[in-house]
Image: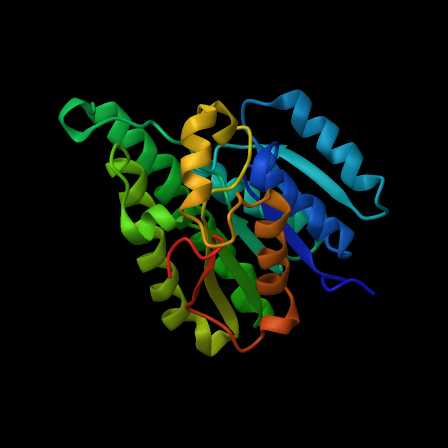
Length: 248
């Protein structure tokens, strides 16, 4: 028996990186998995086939989490297709880095819209079916950058810090309905996104981490499995750092 047997999970932004790892680990633990992708249509279709091969029900949806109406429609469709929603993983996110003095309004607005508003959109849409079921787990992907900031990422850090405040507020509001809300804060995780950094910068990062290595997407996914499962049934309003001790 998997840790997520008989649970229906929705993972946003799952066509690559951490989102893909979360969707895969959830399927391995027995969850039925709905997931979204936006631009990577082929990757989305490939993932659907991969997850289904694990013997669970899986379905990908092309949907923009940062669009309020699309998020509402998506949630209604997932509940229609799967019958319920037990776990929501808000993972969709982007970066548009730049120093504040050079940052454009568009760079600011887009990152806040995609990273922060999407979490509001989908969490709000999930509350109705979860309240009806009197159970649910909302897992929001934040970042260590949301906890300590990062030069050149004022927009990203603000969006990720906003997610933490949102997560804690939702935990307070929905706890009496047995709906839990937690955040996962990855540190330096080796994905396609970090693969674009130069080797020297990557080595510098690793030296500053107590465990002396970058994290793997699967290690973030494992934390999400824990928060989505009944093993964490008395845990809400928390930020779980998956960062090798980077922020201690």
